[in-house]
Image 1 (cartoon, rainbow, N blue to C red):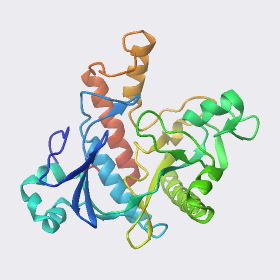
Image 2 (image 1 turned 180 degrees about the vertical axis):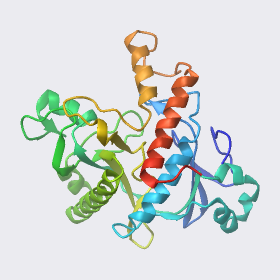
Image 3 (image 1 turned 90 degrees about the horizontal axis):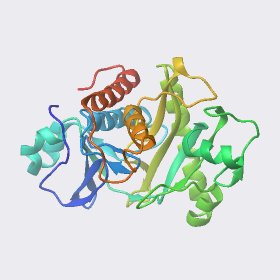
Length: 304
């Protein structure tokens, strides 16, 4: 894998382009996902790309899909560029775009909720709890402090917002929308995946504070995990040796970028909306290293 990929352009029908990924249609049963090195913060996509970010997301997801397949089936067919090209010969001249970043997947109809699991109280959950003692409007135990561990972990679903932020909702909201049995299946699967991933990461010095899973239903009716799984973009990864309840934790993700932008906002130099400010090279490089460090710690290998 070489260079930085800002945007893939492949000879396949483009179904959608997200903040990070392009999703292409291979055929009625198969999709191709390509994770670029684009990065967003505060819901704004930056002009600069973060080297290796897309490869970390793709290869870490592939690692977890393989490791957790006994917990829940998934959509990944292969993340190997040579195998992708073998299966889709029209991509023969696009190996560089696919190398390390492409995932050939089974097609599925997405479940219209983010399946979030919180093992610690942080982020939007902490903000709501601090204000009202609730999560998605439901009462939480009294006396919690920021970044406190939650035992047992909480299934905390959210809506999928087309624009802006996702909104936390209750389990009963999901059950009302999907039916109780499907909602309970999502909750069991989410908690099972989180518990297995959390235990594995803990042995490698990483706390997975929370994460979100995406699920979909195949044409045969099978519920599977889709998109990415247990990556620094979909999860909060904290270094266990620096964990200290009662404050915001350092994390293995785009924290250097968020910190830089938050400082600009505080100084009144950026209003938090597009267009984004230019990023110094040291911020981009520090963000890249956070992603690669997370990959090394989780997989035990360097990024290919």
